[in-house]
Length: 252
Length: 252
Image 1 (tube, each protein chain N blue to C red):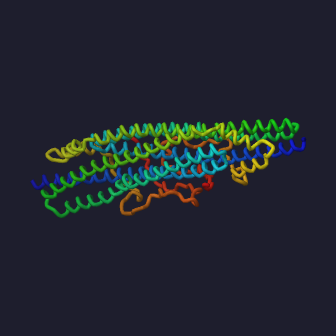
Image 2 (tube, chains in turn brown, purple):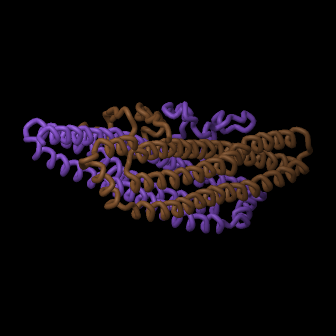
């Protein structure tokens, strides 16, 4: 009877250790990949912030309707980046952090089983182990469901806001009155008082105008933007050396 | 009269050159930042692909309901990445490329004005210049409206699909039967035939189980994920050296 209990206890201890090791391994890896995913979202937000600045800079040089339309778009797009920022923070708090805290839980459970095994008699230990395993498993299923549900909810919230913002932005973009802008532009072209009118147009554009096209965006060089899907053998190569030139245009 | 025309022509030539330089500068910069934005989307898709692999790897070690639920989520999430891939390709074709082709247009217009100025008589040149400027301006407003509208449409299409996919994924996640999984797990724990049952559970989990938590995702180290918004003075520093460790888990 005692031998039977000892065998049972040892088997259960092994099973508990396997379960704990498995959670330790996979939750750790999930945590890493989710964290990487969140970082990429943050990088996308950074790029979008630069885009807002550049659109505003360009808008400042344009005729009234186009200027207004572009500034309006930049504003809406900036608002979307605030939602993206909230999304990034929520994903960190509700997905990455809970997965990270499993490291502590796992350490505690491991100590618990080892302590029980070392100090208690066979029968009591066996029952205790069953309870420990059971609680651990129960909590784990609950937690994984919860973490993934949070992930989905946070993502949905952002995508919903994005649809909302873009719908308004699209309508505003369509409303830009091309004809009126063209009239304004034309009226600045013709004599008699063209030099004064020229000044009006010039005042609208940034000076000095320098040529600052990067090689990447000059037509004819046909440089390929490396956005193709990564292959399996490149998955751990995450360097982003394709961003050698950045726009540092100030918003105005 | 001739002197007046010459003055007018010179002023118009200057204005044309300014307009062309302005477009060259800003379209080039917009092209760069949009290209960077699209690259970040592609990087996000890469991370999401890794996440799909890791969720599948973890699912394979789990009890039936949780396994099914996680595999289902991975499948939906993978589908979303295909939409993201389509989004990336469309943004390249409809936003980045048209902005890039402006390099060619600008070069042609510059040659056109210089040729007109050098070879034609003052009156004809002046009228020609007006037409050239007018067409250029007209086309530019039309193009910029079109490029931004394409951008918004492509983004909306993706966000709409994302909402659709996540809605289904959320419902499936909620449906995971925790109690049944717990019963299955328990039935594998208890004697008399626990060693056989143990084998069933073990067959479900990957072997050998090794500990592979990265330092980043071990609780207690409290390492901060650098996702905070970039400051103005860091905008051109786009290195992503925070991804030193990647998961290369194969899908199974």
